[in-house]
Image 1 (tube, rainbow, N blue to C red):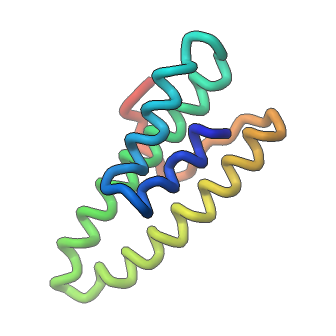
Image 2 (tube, helix red, strand yellow; image 1 turned 120 degrees about the vertical axis):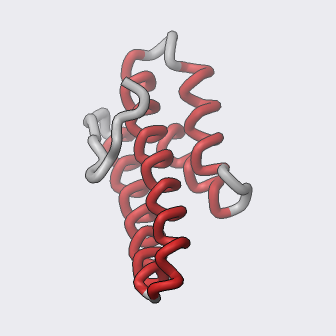
Length: 103
């Protein structure tokens, strides 16, 4: 659950959305197989989201990017909450629209 919730650090620290899950995943991936799976999911989603934010920032020139950035912010917050609750209940969660960088 902490792998998912630590992504909220991105609201305080630049790239904290990637660093938070990365730190928890690296610390506990060898001890708990579920932390390994969920940590990879959280990292892949946050890396994908960062790429989408960069693309949306470029699309601000076409005025589409503003709406995309708002939608991505809402998507990130909702998905983090859902993933955290499911992980806390012992369920596996797979983020939608995620590119698998870490397998």
